[in-house]
Image (cartoon, rainbow, N blue to C red; front, top):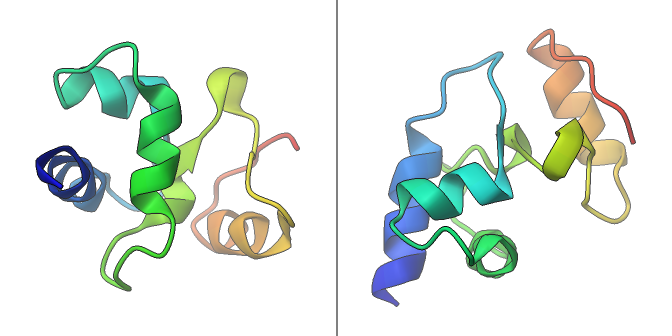
Amino acid sequence: MEFANHVLNIVRTVPPGTVVTYGQVAALAGYPKRARHVGHALAGCPQDVPWHRVLGAGGAVRTQPPQRQLELLLAEGVVTRT
């Protein structure tokens, strides 16, 4: 639970129009090999967490289906690849 809370707090600091990768969040949390765990921590996260700003390696959208994440990112001026 401590890891998940740390992840949520890190993601809350990502400013609009900016993206980070799951791996970057994991490294910032002190667990550089746990990118996949970041995704689990973001699943069902509170509404104040900008989960849509977290992308897969290389900037790819990893949510399924990707439409909502793409919409939110485009609204912030971020162009990604799916």
